[in-house]
Length: 227
Image 1 (cartoon, rainbow, N blue to C red):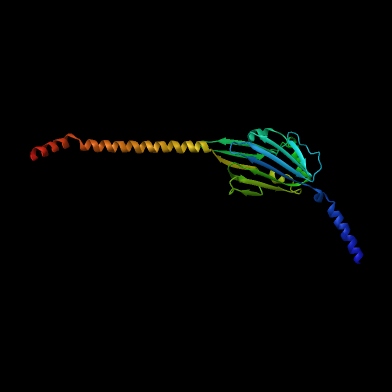
Image 2 (image 1 turned 90 degrees about the horizontal axis):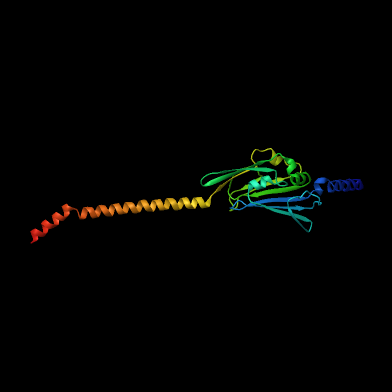
């Protein structure tokens, strides 16, 4: 009886050990946006056989980890390139701030690397936004750090449904520091100008009242009386 239980246990461990989920690797896909709108994209892939479509990426390998990297000048350039995350961007600029909305791009044939990864491995996707995250489909959103970040935890059973079945992938509001500074300076200059003109008006009024003809006549009369 004990031998039978032991044999069944060994078979069960072997089955678990060689299932696709156990063999699946992991990946970490990161996009970091700076204040100028530049995007630094990195992808670290662990325990997966080479052969993934890495067209358009700078690739390097180290101790079983494949590292991919590339740069983009803004979200429009990112959306135009292939082999990245399946997102498209819409940016609206206002006077002192702008909004960036990233939505899911259903043209899956342009994002072969993403489709390959989500079908063979678990992984995390993170976007560090240079602004305040207003809306996101992410598993985690942290707006408290200096660099707000949204993180998606994807598993094989979820595949890409976690990001494809939502209208908005990520929405960020970014304030224009230069415009805000210039606006503050402008209002400060206007305020100082108004204060200065008001002060000059009061001084002129005091001078006019002090040296008016009526006051001069009164002073002359007092001098004559004293004489």
